[in-house]
Length: 460
Image 1 (cartoon, rainbow, N blue to C red):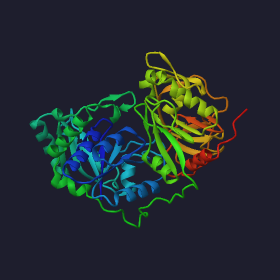
Image 2: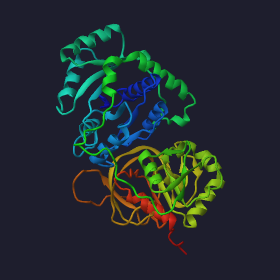
Image 3: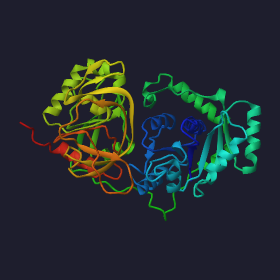
Image 4: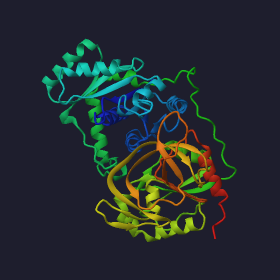
């Protein structure tokens, strides 16, 4: 069946708990497929580092409920164990409708039981009221067991256990305060795995924690996998027909650019793209390619190094000026600006394709967005309605004269509305802060790759 690891709130410890369970399963020699609810990029990096398998995002906002079921069914059916890490607190999701895209929503879509991680710091008998509330708030959500985190002492555990006993809900694990494993973080969440020289040590500690702190006799049956019932949805994703000839696509992959959905990369490959890793930090000239793909990441943390690699910047700028189709998302957009102004107000010269600057600030732009395309780009035609996610602390100084999108806050139903202008579009360029998941819109990467095969005429 598989299980979803949920938190009673953000910061409950569900990522540590999920990673400890995954690491312990691997230590036991058991294969496990992991998933992540929501749009996050970094938690799946840690999952992959632990399991050795690609972690897939399950996000009904960016895709659909049907796609989430199909993705889970296809990717888990041949693996004996499956674990889904939730997002924020169990019922926290989009604002309209309430809870859409939450961990609870995912549990209902997939029909999976929930293991609730409770932060027990500053709690004793009140834990019973809290847990009972989570257990009964939505009767369709099956809370199958608890993991008690931040337990301070044996006496603290006795009080918690006594309070929970009338609920007859199994305690599947107990993590003491001294067991805590620190995962370094920064302004947009955890530090990605590629930047952690101590990663192997962290993974070893997670495995030891998982083996020691969980009741495997109770937990293992929950994570054992079985295919979803065929009456829900077939466990297969729509077939994607490849283009008539392969396309060489250079993809920026290094510490500055690492935010890519696994589904997007697989779609490009299925469509016939040969993904060629290339580093704007370390490499010079572009590889032999027909298109460029810049994902998100942390270019602001490596702005000085990016600025020093003038050879790479010139190669990118010349390629775009000569008509090479280019897709740049969030951090990729920042790289194509004139400069990135870091948190210390220091400017670092970038490619300069876009006549604007990306300035880091304290304000976080975060949330799901509905987007209406206002200008045709290498990826989208005019009038296309899309759904994406913004997550950045930079702002550009000068918007495009003709914006790529009008963005508004996400809502499931309702007519398109005029929103905030955002993004840059040219015949061969798509640059935007908006993160896109192409699971339900494979026509978009197909359009981009077709443009790579048949570039638009160069402007005079």
